[in-house]
Length: 218
Image (cartoon, rainbow, N blue to C red; front, side, top):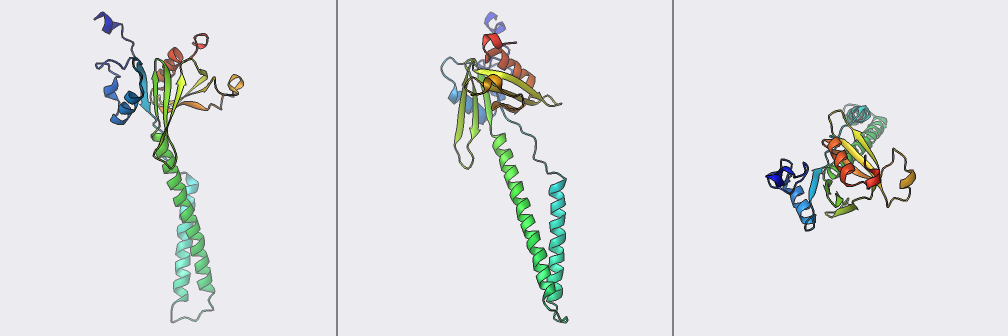
């Protein structure tokens, strides 16, 4: 019992831990277990949970404009093709122009939507873990099935900042000792971090307790 009582609150090594491996998805559990070295203890792991893709007023306004132009183009061409009407061809030309502009807008909107959904999907596939030795970040490589695995040794994190949403989720952003400008890095520019994770305060505290150098710990 003494050993169980002394177990760290974020220790995932025990099978009965509330926050243990059993709480992770199969994919994340497999990734973490395959990466851990003998004797290495997992403190925290999660998958990024980016906000849902949302499209603003401009997207829908362009969609309406494209629909109106497409309708006008179809009307113009149908009127010109009416066998009971004489036409100099201007209605056909106007209809084709309207339809062409509409097609360009629609293709652009579809491309924008596909791109943003793809970015969201890749962001949602990013996984994070913190052990008693290091931080690990799994990031999918664009246009590939490969995964980039970044390891940040314990004590290499500095310039830590927390970005918290009203619901408690958010991001823990930081620079590392390997960044060329880490000593004078701006607050709004952090190249690394655990982005869009739940319970961001807890994640920040784990980072502060385990990943910062002794003289940097709060």
